[in-house]
Amino acid sequence: MSEPKTSRSDGRPDARRATSRRARRAGTVGLIAVLTWASCAIWNSVKPLPPGTHVSSLPARLAESQVDFIDDDSHHSTTLKREFEAIGRAEQLIVLDLCPLAHELAEQLLLRKRQRPNLKIVLVTDPRNEVYGGTPAQTLSILETAGIIVARTRLALLRDSDPLYSSLWRLGIGWWSDPFDEVPGETTLISELRRRNLKANQRQLLVADDGAGGWTSIVMSAASGGAAATAKVGLEIRGPLARDIVASELRIAAWSTDDDRLPVAPPTMGRGVGTIDARFLTEGAIHAALRDVIAITGSGDSISVLMGTFDDRQMVNAMLRAAARGVRLQLVLDPAFPGTRAAAGELVHDAAGNVEVRWQAAAAPTEARYALIRHRNDVWINLGSANFTHRDLDDLNLEADVELHMPARTAPARAAAELFSREWSSAAAYADYADESAATYWRYRLADVTGLAMF
Image 1 (cartoon, rainbow, N blue to C red):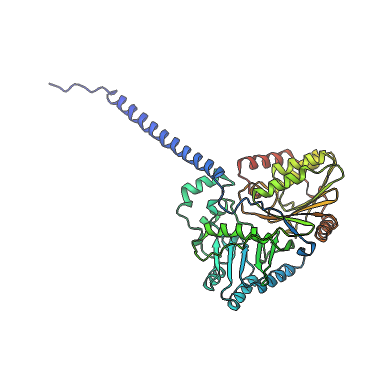
Image 2: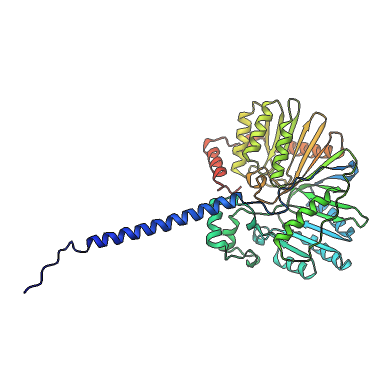
């Protein structure tokens, strides 16, 4: 007997069921992947801050003679000289947070360590590849061999400023990529991908005892040294503020290195006497302090800002509200960043004539980052490493500023005003780099909201 013919449709239901099962499995895997990515992005945007961050110290009362405004327009010679002097006086402890570390400064640390073998020296620094402006790995190794504690900041413990990208990095590459194994002086794919996380330790400061029971703190507004270094400003402060700075830095060093030789912070010192109140501010605390001071300004007051990048939405809105109250605003900004040009355009356009913007020289922008706020007979100076950006002011990067509150007649207030006046008079007109186009503005707003901005 002949075999019955098999229908051509036989097996098709099974094939369809198999295809459907595969599609469901793929959908389930895809959903799990998206949920994992989203969970990682959300957690690393809101997770608790590590110790030593978001610091707002109690005010330290200082005499005018304890505060020097450093106006360095000669290739850092003034700043380096003060740093050398502070290192040369130290007998107990030196704490630095710098990147890059100038070669001359590294040599001075080694010299002082040889002179005082029992002197504790702690360097907290960004682990970035030297191609991107980091300290050469060989320099850090030499310091460690000499007995200096080097804490390469573990940036992964910070919140993500670009969670959409950084969550993919954490899940796909970051867990097996060691930032300290990069080839010195070379750009690699891994180092470039890591750089796009937009994480950095940008604090620029040095604290040292003075060998006579006192302390010297130097807080700067830009990187110390390096071939591309430009003019910058800073503050040298003698007195009790040092304790708060050292305490914050040692906490960061504790979660950035396993070295058990870390010293303890100096004991709490008295509040002091004088006419100047100084506070140490870091990360988001800088943001809060600036908004608080700007909020009290009114008609007849003024705000002067010398800054590289300015595009933080809360700062833009605070400035617009101040202008609406009759506050006069003058800003000298770097035109190299589209977001800054867009924010400047918004300020000029919406501030009813109370905001003036000029631009730093494109060929040699200053590295000064400070705000000078005048309210009646008082002046506030906020100076340090932070630009007025989302990354720098919202607890994402490591930043450090000092806030000084003092009478307008004091020497630091006059020096800061003189520097701003000089920068203002030499700056380019707003029209030279103005960009008030809708396309630039909305690209800036979209990049700010999504975290995809490279500023």
